[in-house]
Length: 114
View 1: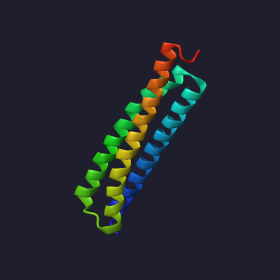
View 2: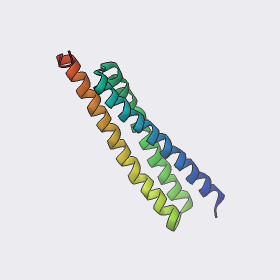
View 3: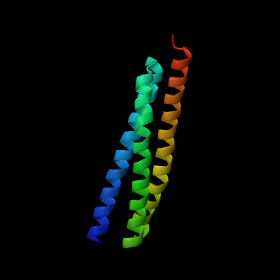
């Protein structure tokens, strides 16, 4: 098996784990902001969204690079295409965390939390 392909696949796994961590953190923080009625926590979620979006693009480009340079077959090809699907879904989850955070800011601004 191609050593360079295996290294790239390991890097892709690390990228995915980092994106999962960021999205999970955003969702947890957004829910906590809602539970604690904390608009400052909500702002952190909104600020972090650009990191998730940027990481999605980095991973997508990295997947395309792997496909172009290594021409993976079978299991590796399925993993790469699954990763491309996963990052799209993870990015959507990050967007939902932002939606929650924006509602927290709205509610706080309108004084509903008081």
